[in-house]
Length: 194
Image (cartoon, rainbow, N blue to C red):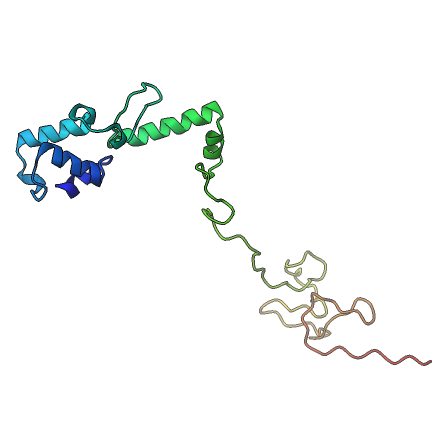
């Protein structure tokens, strides 16, 4: 009986246990074996628990904002009432309303290290840098018929240009082009005469 009653949204273990004790129903009885009169009395208590001398602290909606009454909400009424409460707080511009608007914790919890949402934040790993192409934007294929630049890889299926080397190209003497692939060692600079 207790487990069956707790399947109703808004009825917890203690509330279900107190209903059974109040109606003097055997708690080991299965819910399918109840009489129609017992089912009606359970429904009446769940819908209006204040009629059967339940204390106000047992109810889940005490001192309702609109009516000022003590109520016990069940099923979809809970979601509807909570949604209305949140919308009312947002409309009044209260601190709780602002916290709800920005999706932050409302009840004073820590937010520095707990309750993170979304993916992990960090540096994205980059891909390989493509070598520079002659006469075009980096990464763009060379024009047809144009010889491949020195140090740049030839297009797939096309023969390499005769003068192309696998070595690094230099823009100034002693300065390496960082975009060309490295294949040979850099020569040591010549010693100066003093």
